[in-house]
Length: 272
Image 1 (tube, helix red, strand yellow):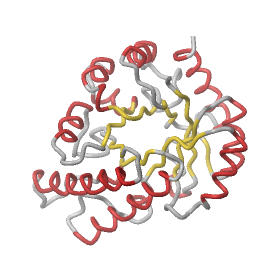
Image 2 (cartoon, helix red, strand yellow):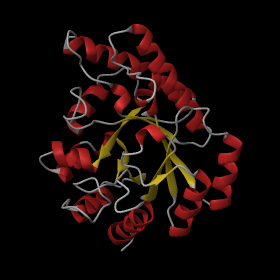
Image 3 (spheres, one colour):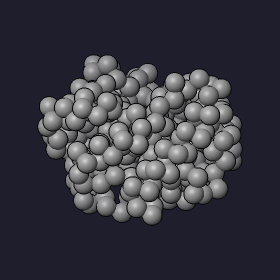
């Protein structure tokens, strides 16, 4: 069964980013539950930024699940990436992500590697950067195995990374890894930029997809852009995707209305 999810960001440095709820965890969880969301995707400054016991209580009271945790603060705040030319920084990136995997796994939640994959920087050959990325993902994929959760890798659009931009390129790379525990994140916003057909890309890479980011072509909540979401929803149902579709979208025009639009769209496309 496809499940609804909404993003909550608790990192002031990413205030302009595509997350629906902000700042207050308890208030955000309460609002999400009242609207009927089934899960939350959480962005924190680090793995120890939230007390697990407090989060457990809030989730139990609300009936929500922690679906996923983002790792992007490792890059935004600390400057860590898996493809940095400095081996010490690559090690710090790996440690940061491993800690986030451990935090999320307490709730059977996925950890997502998006911006922390980094970029191929000047003076570094593509082959070398991809070797560093593979090294990091192999280690972290197995770290996630030990915690009994998959690891999620997100292809980003060309304006955010020059590593891997499409689902097919991502799937081919993941299939080359030693670990078999890394799955793709299909982000509809990034796909709208990079894929010639969102539905065909989903079908071709269905076995590799482990998480969905639910946002329209302009990164506003679904229904406020031009993405053909009905076709995508039908495709996800036909391939028997049974994970979360998570609203990593801009809080436009404000968090409450963005959340309301998202759950309305979710019911329209997945519960009709």
